[in-house]
Image 1 (cartoon, rainbow, N blue to C red):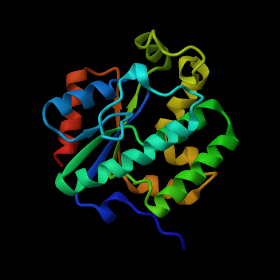
Image 2: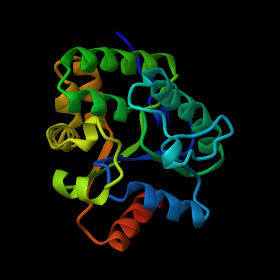
Image 3: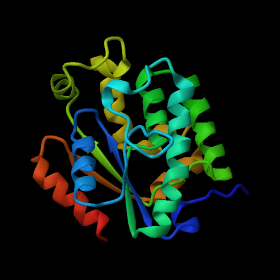
Length: 212
């Protein structure tokens, strides 16, 4: 039977990953945590671990660059987890599966699910201890992101609705392609937050989760 490198099996600290709908407030919370001294990893990072600004994120067609980012963040999270009781990450490899699901391309989702399973098996990816999943109405997501790149699936209401469905139950979304990955996702702590709630309340919730 295959084995998977869960985060808590190989490192000391807990990895808390913020995932969910664009525009729901994840990045703002991570920035506030960083300002308060909490060890964090931004959505996209440089080789030195610095956060890449939004206007410098790779384009939607730069698939290899996106995938390399999730692997690089795993490498960067390990030493942080050895030194700190908790590390907060703005998205991880789950976003790659969420993107595939949002496009409606089942072949892409199957390929990325297999990639994630392989990465968890060989240690190039980590399974978070806690996923905090941020919900937001797709129309509100668009309204909050007037500069969303034209042509990106997440600038279109249909894919955003599918994305919302993915984050409602990620394990169910990948279950047809990997029952093992689905079971692993169910085994982790998963909390749902609403991007419609006050930002201060969501920040307090995340702080409490990190302090557990």
